[in-house]
Length: 632
Image (cartoon, rainbow, N blue to C red):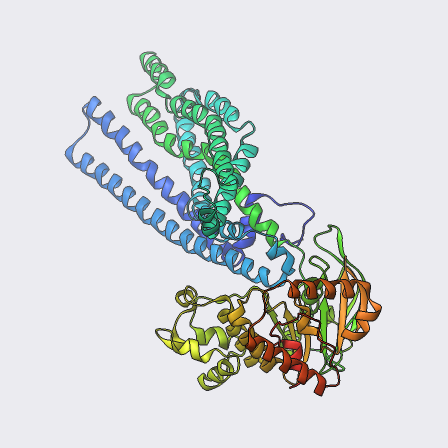
């Protein structure tokens, strides 16, 4: 069976995971390994040449012509080694960068397919670690370690084969220090992998905490905190310090011992070779060859000794990527389906996040075309979860969420998003131009259509005041725009999209009083003639809704119009009473607010939905999404 992140039964080896990401270039990697091995063989030739030159000098048989010939052979061998190693390195680097790009592309595509909860529950710094740090640390593993590991083994094996062919006793002498080096290496590798895993995880946690620290620096400074007093960051730094020392203590001493012992081949081979020569059992050229050649394979052998640490580090980094790519996905078909209408229906829907406690319990309701459905309830009652299930960000744990009579799990995500505009309370603008941010609603839209959507959303005036107008990058404008202005740009994006279903997830929650009326006016333009589902925290904005769903503790505890719920739903009546009490405790409203409140009541009366204004209520809700929607 093909090794794949989708096979979650067991993690494959580090090499199997690397092999998976290098699938298109497996043949090229084999070629790179072969070139590296040829380069190592060529690199051994100069050592043989040195032995032959030394023997000729000692014996007095070395002529100028022979010396020149041997020097030429050595120079040619050096040139060949450079050429083959260079070609191997170039090839492996191309393969490495292509594999790293594949990893990042697969993770980016994976982010589009996993449930939104997987993204929301993961700190931003963790994604930075996955995409940047983990992937970057694999460059050496692919570009250098992979081709060099076989050559670092092949070169010494070939060299020792030559020595053994000359004299088996000198061959054994050349390997005399290897067992002691292996013993030290085994000591170094004891508990090496968990220490390496702890080191890398602590490094990633520190990076994540650093991102969080930078993002929250305004709050930290406002409350007089410092980097050392901010617990999350200081603890992460301390853990990184401790894990680094634990890892280095494990490897430093033993690796130093390996490097000190393995090169000492002359301690055994030199006296043995002298004794064999004295006994007439070994000629001088053979003696020098057996002495010099082992010196040539010490370097590659020491590199091979570091392979264990590199493999452990590589495996930990790959596991982070591999596990994310193996996350369960939202399964959606590719073929478009036939929809019977444009209404949502929840049928006994229950939902829990990541096998945690259930947050929705047996929820059932239906929206109606061209009508307003408002969802209200205390904080944490499950309102936003319902909205996100509609948008297809998660799948119901049990029950059925249907759109147009079809389970959303059977509708291609692109087809569902064509029919739905989702506007959340947390507005995000990409670091591109304001025009391109709005154009994300419909990439094919012209500049005139973008401007028309901006005018409808009340954006044109403040966008025109920006240094480059619509060509201003949002990253630069973000410092100049208020939350309400950013929200209106998001609404302009939804207006341009033109979807018949609009889901507002507390879209005015973060708007300041000055911008709130403007945001709500923009919303009224967005929802004109469309089906609206609004998650509301201000009850004044939902009094004119066709259907109000009241949620509490993950259940629907009431449904109906404003008047019906005041009479028949205890939770809603209590919420409205608290809302009215909060209004009555505020300072007297301005005459403009009273006029706006009166205008709202007049419009509500025209719809036949007027209710008696609660005494003391002076809130200017004439721009409310539900109220404006009812008088479109």
